[in-house]
Length: 209
Image 1: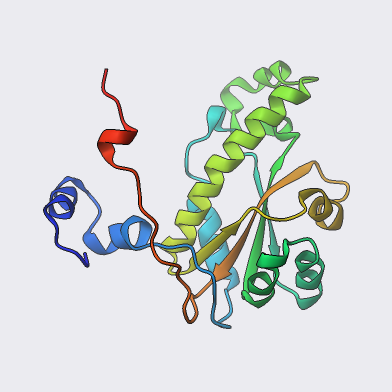
Image 2: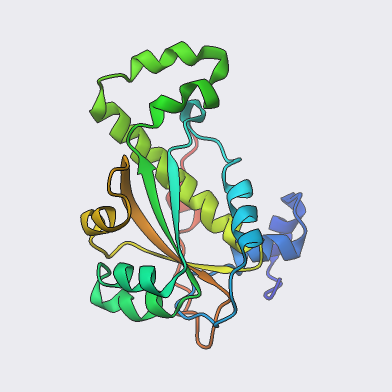
């Protein structure tokens, strides 16, 4: 660890991860704003997904769907739907992941919940409940996704300022997908990090009853 405070030394005592892994995933991991032009490989993308898919979701529903945007033509189409402040870094990142959730995730019940596939009937015709569960669990999986990106030695730059409906029309026509996040992925470039912002203290953010 970079700063040998008593709190950090005590933290390491409680971890089963080594210090380097804890730094990579949590303590030193940052959201990148610039990237090098080093390509992101197909093997890295598969490794990211293989890690991210293992995190828990409600009833194992796994609603996250990923659209990898790699080609120059697809990148140009995507950039047009980004907010002005995000366009340059999305255009420059070696790869961009569009994260969405499947509004018809319940159709996969026989695959993700084979021991009780009949529970699919609970969600047939209930679009509102499916949307709530899909959105909530999709965001949970997005967090796993970001940590998986860090775990393979890359940096993630998640963004929320974009035209989601426009992206869906552009990339997900005919699919039951709702975009909720766009993530730039690659090796961090020059001046990639903004200053670290403060985190809330344990005593402020937690309550024991």
